[in-house]
Length: 87
Image 1 (spheres, rainbow, N blue to C red):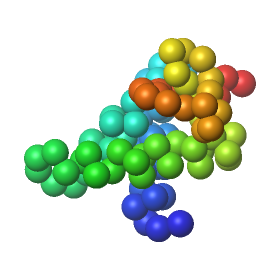
Image 2: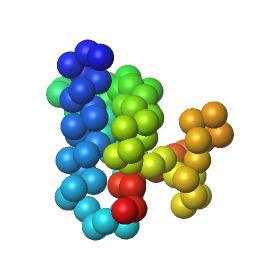
Image 3: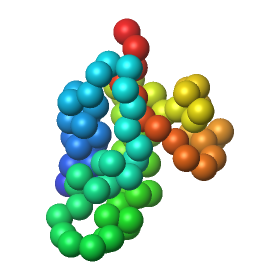
């Protein structure tokens, strides 16, 4: 795993920690927060942000949802959200 990958995972967890337990974030929130530059270069981080979310799912830290329901990576199409695992 590269440093940018780890950075995205850290950003996702940090953003979630700043929100209510029931709140979720969009991968674009993480991409924007991790991007260090001007303009819309954050868009290049969208797919890496999604991959970071799936690594965090595998680690049991978060779940990825679509329309408020958890989805598997193979089922995730279109807009997704990321939220902490409810314990």
